Length: 451
Image 1 (cartoon, rainbow, N blue to C red):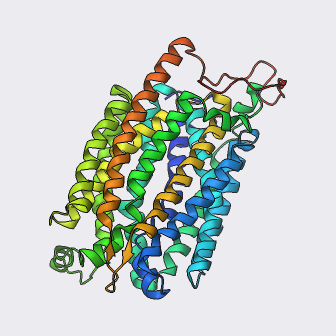
Image 2: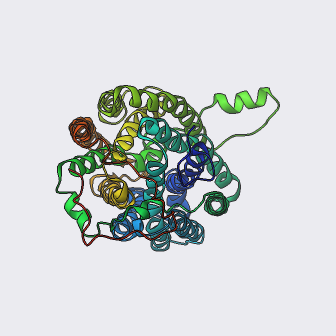
C-alpha cells in the first residue's frame, strides 16, 4: 500500500489507529443509552428523560463543531487530536462521579465539547492520507468501530455495570481512552501537509459553504440519517425492557451451563454482542460495494431495510423475536452509514477538510441532540415506566429514512460533475523543494468553497 509523503508509518496503520480513536468516541456515546434503565432506578431519572442525557452530549458537540471550523485546520492534526481525546476522556470519567440528572448532563457536556472535534479531526486525517479510490474501504474500517463497540465494548461495559455498578463502565472507558490517546500521540507523526498548501482556513466562510449545493446536500443527507436513527435509538433499551418486557435470551445461560459456566449475563449485553457481530460482517462488504457502485445505490438499499424494520418494530409492532429485530436494525444502520460518510470525504477541498468535517460534526450533533430530545416531548411515561408514543417516532424515522438516499443521490451527481471539471480539486500536493518545514506564503483570501 502506498505511503503518504508525510507518513513514517503505513497508511493501514494510520487507518487502524483512527479506527481505535473512533471506537473510544463511539463507545463513550453508546454506553449511555443501554444504561438508561439503571439511571432510572439508581438516580431516579424519568424514563422519558433518558433522551436528554444523550442530547446533552450531542448539543455540546455541535457547539464545539461550529467553533472548531474556525481553527482546526490551522494546527497539526496530531496535536489537535491529542487535545480533543484528552477532553473526551476527562468528560467520560466525570460521568462516573455524577449523582443526579444535572451532574450527569454536565459531565456529558464536557465529553461532547471534545468528542465532536475528535471525530472531525479523525475523518480529516483519513481524507488526507487515503487516496479517493480506496477511501470507501478505509471508511468501512473506521466505521467498523461502531460494530466492534457493539460486539465487545457495550456488552463488556454492561457486564461491568452488572457486576460493579453503573459508574464502573465510565471509568473503564476513560482508562481505555487514555491508552488509545497515548498511542495516537506516540505513533502518529506530525500531520502538517495541509498547512503547506498556502491557504487560510475558511472561518466564517464555512457558513457560506452551507449555502452552496454540494455542502448543503451533504449536510441535509447527514441530518436525515441522524434523525431517522436517533429519533428511536436512545429509547430502545427502555422500550425493550418496559414495553416489550424483554428479559434476555434464555438460551444463553443454558448454553453456558452446558459447558460448565454458571452465569446469567445482563439483559441487553447479548443483543449488542450479536447485533454488532452481524454489523461487522455486513460492513466488510458495504465499503467495497460503495467503492464499486457509488454511495447513492448502496444508500437506497439501506433505506429500504431501515423502513422495513422501523415499521415492524415500532409503527405496527409484530411479535417477532427481539434479538432478530435488534440485529435487523443494526444491520440497516450499517448499510446506510458507510456510503453517507464516504461521500462526505469527497465534498471538501484538501485545505478545508478538518473545517468541513467539523461543520458536518456540528450538523450531526445538532440534529442528534434535537432528535434524541424529541422523544422527551413526544413520549410519555406510563405508571409502569413503559413508553407511550413510539409509533409516532417510528413514522418520523421513516420519513427521514427516505430523504437520506434522495439527498445522497443528488450530492453524488454533483460531485461527479464537479470532478469532471476539476479532477485535481481534492488532491493534497506534497510540499515544494523548500521542504515541508518551510512556511508557505499565505494569500490574502481563501479560494471559494466547493460548489
